[in-house]
Length: 137
Image 1: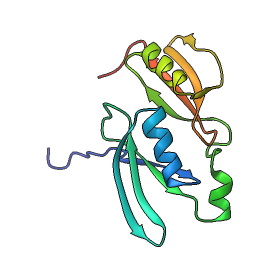
Image 2 (image 1 turned 60 degrees about the horizontal axis):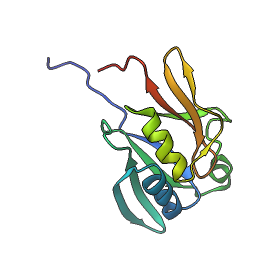
Image 3 (image 1 turned 90 degrees about the horizontal axis):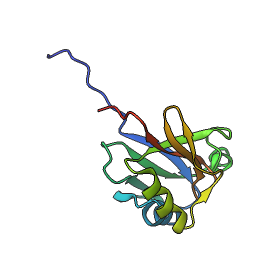
Image 4 (image 1 turned 180 degrees about the vertical axis):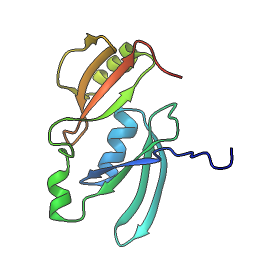
């Protein structure tokens, strides 16, 4: 259908203190792939990371460049869970992340929708690691 709307979220920006420390956390502790790291000049880089098996949505690691952005590092959602990392094997990923030193805010729990635990990235942003009981698609 010619007029059919087709859209998807390509990237979500995450403000970070330092490109290299953020890349190290996401690639080493969470096993994300470094999709792109392009020097844009003047200290700026275009850095995309993505979880294994991603559907094409990337995390854009954007270095804080002013006071307002620096204050947002680690608290982009005012203390709420920011991002939801879906897994097809919760316990495999939880145990791997725990062995890599990822900080968890709680013990894993069963909810009506699936198995979930809240963890933090290197700056304190909260994430859910989640395996849905009835995944879609």
